[in-house]
Image (cartoon, rainbow, N blue to C red; front, top):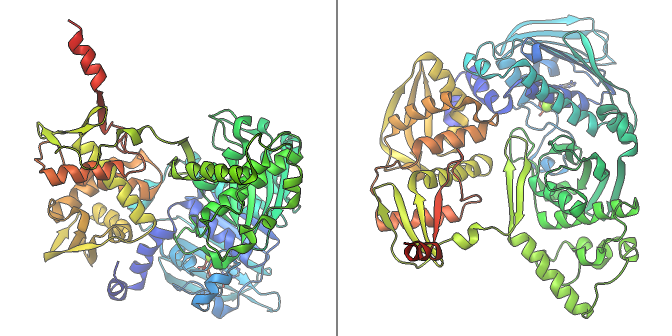
Length: 615
Ligand code: ADP
Ligand code: MG
């Protein structure tokens, strides 16, 4: 979305569009409101939901409250008391910082706010519907703030229709609620669902909070972990191996008290348990990392769960060592070779020189070294370091992790990949197209038969996903802007997808009355596709693909890949075929298309040989 668009559109619509980013479902409202209550310094927070939040979400806190002016201001877009300058981003300790949440929520629901500062005699009551202030009046109220959000998405039917069943939406709400409750054990939390007390969490320490949330059996299953250096400290609990489960419940990372998903760090934890866990089980953990905010980029994604940090590997190694140490101390892993796992050995030169505290041997708490039960047999100190280094590098270079994009969990991870051997030699013979459907490409041991459509879908999918999560894509301007006219429901859907589509490299602008101006499409798709047709098919596919995944980005990337991929019956020239194959094998998961269809089949010369020798 261009800045111009926001200026042209009435605020209410701009807010509705922005709301699509911040508020995806009732659980997003819960997250934003409860985090605001935490930021307001409350020590008691009460959450009430009805019909999985579709009818009512109410959050009441005993925090600082707001003056009448602040209450009114808090509903404006980019109104926030938490960020004054760009630099403040780096010293951030509150949860919210964009000032978008309340403005988004009031754009798509019927909201009542009551708030009072302890020092004021009277509080304020505000009623807002679709961004319009209906009532603003002084009112008696207890100190703190209470926000009721009714009939979420009442004015965005496309969104409302996409909501899942009550049980699914309620599960998302509980997840968000539990994440925040785990991060703030000193706050009392009560959750009421349809007038019934669902979960009551009294103030306490982290251990008590975990037991209150997950059950008494965790009393004997928690192993504390704790290590600290100047720039990074790690604390929390990991489960004993008995606490591991076959399903993905009970994995929590918090960075500076902010819940994050990280398949990368999850992998570090799994590696720390090593053979203590069966391959298909997930360890329990609630892990807090404190990192200098100057070293984390917290402004990556509007829902703020995907955080980027520098020196990922360093954190990976440190986390793994810390957990091993914790498990070792709890005598669960009696003979760990810490030395071999020491990621901080001086020979690791790949780290940036200015991260000295972690870079040196001193960074590793000396007790870790002391507890080393034995040194690896044979080889000099230097030789061992060298081989450790090789091992670590091997580990990272071949790290292949498949992630469930909905939950951020690792579905499958392997060291090294079979597909590496499948990759065709870069300067091999020219590929050959078969029936305008498959590409034949020679590899060392035989040849590959690549399904051009499946391969292209995989390539586009990974491309789009990266674009949505990390960086906006280049747009290729059309020669003439075109107008796309849509029926009401489709127009709503289109509006809700606009920010993401524009991030993907479309250049679209809402024109009102179901019309959209199409100025360009992703450079990646230009040439081969008719703009209007592509968009219409995309909407169609999107509506058909609803239950593929609950992750909006993934669904969109999948759908667009599906829509835009070259189809069977398309003739490809040499360059196109080569590029397709190169890009396929540069993918994280080249073997299958996002819909699970194989991208290629491998033929071994040996097998063919055998065929000929047969009869
Ligand atoms: P952000 O949290 O990113 O600042 P929000 O839209 O969530 O943006 O909130 C806007 C502002 O409203 C906050 O910065 C804060 O000043 C005020 N606010 C919101 N909720 C509360 C609350 N429960 N108690 C006190 N102030 C609040
Ligand atoms: Mg907020």
